[in-house]
Image (cartoon, rainbow, N blue to C red; front, side):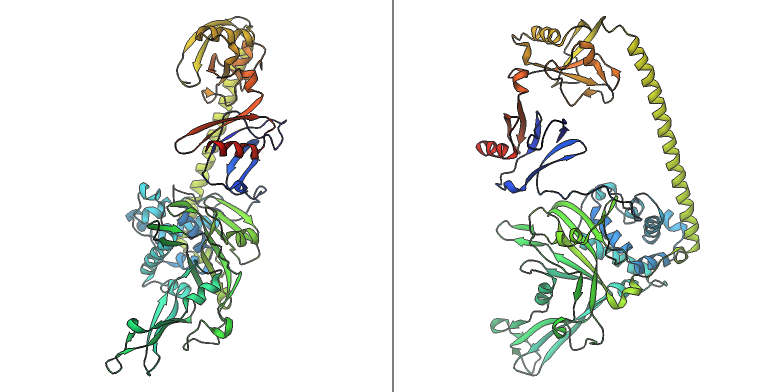
Length: 569
């Protein structure tokens, strides 16, 4: 929760009256910080954020979040920024009837990619999710990015069959591995070749990607009761079981297994362990230890990091976004739904290694093979888009621009009308006799929508005169326990900051907000006199069941608050 900050406050005096913060039961004092944001004081439980200057304008645009579609947005941005994939999507044959009939993914995806390439504003994904058969409810349900990736690629693979784009998914993402079982004491070996579109790598117990690959090809011994049933001639045999790679794809997708079953809690939990990954991944290391005998050793398996998909939060909730190098240059970009910003390598890579609960960490990595880089990262321009699509999309773009211009003109017209009305009200207000009697509506701050009582008061009454009248009406002996708040004429509610003790000279000054006049005042009854309260800094803290009130001297620091909380929680 935020409150306005006065110019006089220094960084150790950060508390405003009735601030609210969340209280956790842990004891991690190092995770508390405060900071200023947009002229407001912010007191937060969590890691100290990185201070970022306003993002420079980029040539890339974001995707609008429909509610809980951040996982989809991060993956779509990653796929879009693989030009070979984008070009293949553009080549898929489509007609205008596809959109009218519904259920066809290629045309909405082509439209989405075109907008990402040529629009200047964030792009909506509603037409695409509609082609998935999703309703509004589904768009507010967060799903797994790995599962979505597989389902989307399978659907596109089916749609590409029989077209010039057929085989694109396999060409880009498909690699092959050899599963083997090799008997130790007899000359018998069983092998099975399998394809993969992505690799799931263990995070738990592995310090980095190379350790995960080591574990992936680790040999398992089949012995004792677990011996291998060979053919009829050899029967049960001691054997070695494992997997090695025949070839890797041009675009290598690594799914990091950030979730594991916790037998104590009887549920899946997120693994936030620190896990490192390199900018360049050499899968020929140690004389090709990951390669099978069938692998072509003349092929260089050196990969460059292209994308880092990140998850922040817990298993059942959180947020996805992506760091991408669209041209594999040194410059990274953060694609966070509708926001796109430049980021440095440290923040895009090293800060996503993880290591702390609730902190963001890498969830999926995309590497581009160096030997296939020129083809995978090829140039894509308008001529790669079918003519009928170019005509359609340009027409839609002009319609969107015309609609945006219309909205801007309507907004400007409404603003001018508002200013004119405000100017007229200001003149009327200046012509009123401010010393005359006016009917004043008093409302309890606890029920700000209802009038409690009214007085006909002179606008020349002082602050003390008004509080005395209110206290007398409420049966209070001490009028200094009355605190008043003015009415916000724009938002029709109490303004955030109450009137300080003798902070105004006359009643007429209590009614002016944003140069507009109102005859509504809010009151509250304090447990201690207002002058005494103003010498303290107070805040309310709450957990799931209890609300605590803390009052401390103005010079109190964060440490004082923490110590006071420890005596209560």
